Length: 327
Image 1 (cartoon, rainbow, N blue to C red):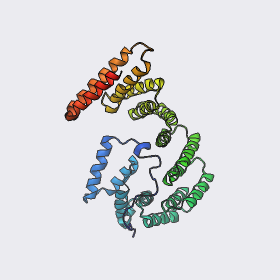
Image 2 (image 1 turned 30 degrees about the horizontal axis):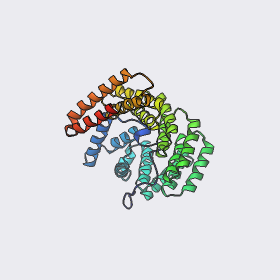
Image 3 (image 1 turned 90 degrees about the horizontal axis):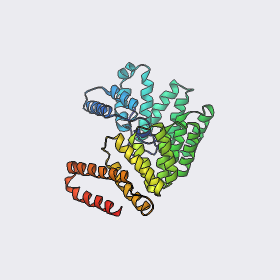
Image 4 (image 1 turned 135 degrees about the horizontal axis):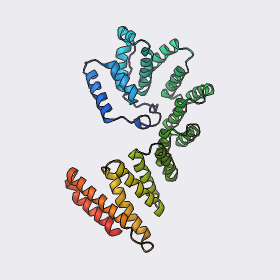
């Protein structure tokens, strides 16, 4: 019988590969609601454990403690396990990864042993073995295992990503950057990797490099407002007239993509307009279009604050006036 041992500790293995659902799949509100309702049902003994586990896999979300608990409830019941048919092996793999994430390494090892016995030549099981070495903190052995696996299949994306995750887990940020750049030399269209690299660069205050990465992300997914906003933030941070002017355009596109409901982007337009006015004072004519956009953004902010934070409306008004005066 598989049993989780000890308390659940923060994992030493970054199982998210490239960030959160972040870089795998955007979960819609409907999907999230469905998952949460099913989780409550299963937690309260209402059945549906397999359906819940299948949905977790489909959405690629991280619910490791729940997967471990409910996955083991099926694996430890011979009747339920046999009813799965070939999907039994999928569940063993899912539970093994969840167990690593929860530092229940005995369970993870038992699951991988079962899989290795059933699929002795499987590279996929070999990858699980290497991940288990990661979870144990055996970094050198894990690296050797991944290197060996890549010799057989140089285009295994998951293993390339695991190398990045392993470098980050060890605090080796320069190593993570190196592996990410090598990965992107092969998989240039992976926008998730570009975003991960951007976030790593931001952590090091390497804003020019981060801006380049966000440009690649926006090219791949031009309708995602989050990317426009992140790019605008980086450009505004870099400063300089050209960067601030471009930042303003991307704040404006964020507002457009969100139907005028992104508070950060509205503030961004006001800040950029003020900064541009200061940078061009005495050099160019007043940017009437920019002033109009700032006015519209300020009105949208005031309306939003009246509805959601009326007690802070006076502070907002003061802040907006100071921006107008400074420009």
